[in-house]
Amino acid sequence: MKIFYTSVLIISLIISGLSTFAQCPDCVPDETCIPEVAFPAICPEILPVATAGEYYETVITFYMPAELEDPESGFIVTLNQILVSGITGIPFGLSYELSGDDNIYYPSQGEQFGCATICGTPILPGEYSVNVNVVASVTVFGISQTLPQSFGIDLLVLPGEGGTNSFIYDNQAACDELSVQFEALINGSPNPTAWDWDFGNGNTSDQQIPPVQVYDEPGEYIATCTTIITEYFLQSVNVTSFWDNWSGDIEEATAFFFSPDPYFTLTDASNSPVYASSVIDDVTSASWNNLNIPLGNPPYTISFWDEDLISETDFLGSYEMPFSPGAFSFNANGTMGILTIEAIAGDPIYDEQIFTVFPDPITSFIVDEASDIITFDNPDLDTFLWFFNNDTINNANGPSLEMNNPGVYYCEVTNIYGCSGISEPYILCPEISILYNPFEETLSVSPGYETYTWFYNGLPLENEDENIISSYGLGNYAVTITTNYGCEVESSVYSITVGINEIDPFENLVVFPNPSSGLFQLRNLTSAPTWQVYDLAGRLITQSDISLRNEIDLRHLSSGVYVLNLQLNNFRKSLPLIIER
Image (cartoon, rainbow, N blue to C red; front, side, top):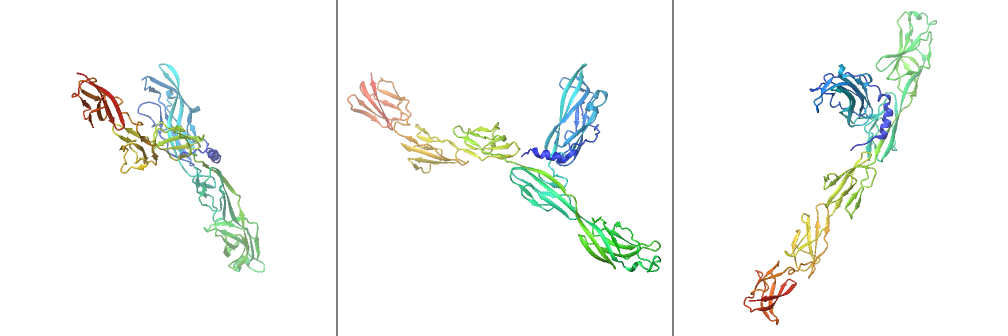
C-alpha cells in the first residue's frame, strides 16, 4: 500500500532546517564512465540506495563525447555545448550541486566529463526516477541545432527511523491505524532527567521509552516531549574545626601565633581533580560560599589540605559527598563542618512532531440490479482493480462494472491518500429457465452447477440430480440449483399441458401420394401415431397401433374416398385418402 504525507512533509521540512537544502560538496567526475560506443552516458546507471531520515550523498558523472554517430541516420554529430537545465524527480529533502560554470559544458573543446553531487536527507521512502535534463547544441553537416534530451536514473529510498533533536520514533504515518514506538534521546544520567510526553492521543508518559502509542482514528496528531535535566551543584563548604595534622611544621613553630592555611579539592568518579578552592590563611574555621560547582560525574570526594610554603602540604582529611540536594554534616578524619548541595533544573528541551493517520477507503458500492451494474459513488477513490471469481478482470479499472456472468465480484480500491481496501463480495446468481424438448420428452437447465433438485407437481423427484431429466408426463415442473459460490436459485414452474407448451406433431404432416393406388406415406412425422381408416359411411375399415414405416397400405380396397384418423398423445387429425386405379 502507498501513503502520501502532505502535512508530514511540511513539518519534516521545518525540522530538517537548512541542512536539508545545504549546498552539496563539489564533485569529481568518474573518468572511467566511457561506454563501448561513443555516446552520451550517465554513471552509475542505478544510484546507491538511500534511507529516509538519514543523510545521503552520491556523485553522478556525465560523459559527453566530442563526436558521436547518430544511431538512426548514421551521421556524425559534433557536440558543441551541453547545458544541464536541471535535475528533476529527486526525493523530497535532497538537492544537487553541478560542476561547471553556469552548468554548461563544451565537449568539442575537450570538456567531456561533468558531474553533480546529490545530497541531503530524503524524507519519504519509495522508488524514484531521477531525470537529468539537458539541452545539447550540435552540428551536423555544418548545420547547428539545439536538441533537448533527458536521461533517467533510478533511486531507491528505504524506510528509516524518524526523529527530532530530542526523541525518535519508528513510524510517522499509516492508513486506518498507526502504532508508534517513541524513545527520548536525551538522558543526563547520573543527573536526574525528567521526560514529559504528550502524544496527542490522550496519553502521556514520564518514561524515556514509553509504551507503544496507537492512533486509531484518521487525522493529524502532534506528539510533544519536554526534557528537563536537573544538575547538582556544590554551593558552600563550612568547616568548623580542622584535624590537627597541620601542626608541627616549621611554619607553625608556635601554635599560639600560627593556624592552618586550609583549602579543599574535589575529585570525581574517575579520581580526576575537578576543582581546587582558594586558600584561607591562618584560620581554625573556614567558609567557601557561592561556589556553584557542577557535580556531573559522581561520586565526588572532597579533601581538605593545609598549604605550607616550605614543608610539605598537610592532608586534613577527605569525605565522599552524597549525590543529592541538601545540607550535609561531614567528619573528614576530624575535619568537620557542613556542606550544601543544590539541585538546579536546566532549561526545558522541547520538540514536537506530527503523526498522520489516513482514512481507509470507503468500499461500499451501489448495485443496479436491473442492469447488473456495480458503481462506486465516492469522489475520494482514486484507483479500481476489479475481480471476478478471484481473477482480475482485464481493462476493468473504472468506478463502474457491468456484470456479464454469474459469479463473485469484488474490487480493490485506493483512495486519494494512497490507502487501499477491498470491497465486500457481490454474488450475482444465475437465472434458471427450464427447456423442454418435446421430441425427446426431456426437461433441462444449464449444466455446471453444484447440485440439482427437481420437483414434479410440487414434490421432489428422487434420484433426479442432474441438469436433464425425462418427462414424467403432463404436469408442473421446477428445479432448484446451488452453485459453488453460494447461490441457491429456484426456477419458475414449467407446465406441460394439452395444447400448451407442446408442438402439434401433425402440424407439418404431408400424405404422399394422394391420390394413390392405395399405398400412402406419412411424411414429416417425428413420432409414430396410431391410425384408423373409415369409409364415408363411418365404418371402420382397418387400423394399426403403430406404423413403424409411417406407411398405410390400402391397396386391397377399391377405388374411392376414405377418411384417415391419426392420434399421437393428445393430438388428433383427420384427412381424406383417395384411391384411384
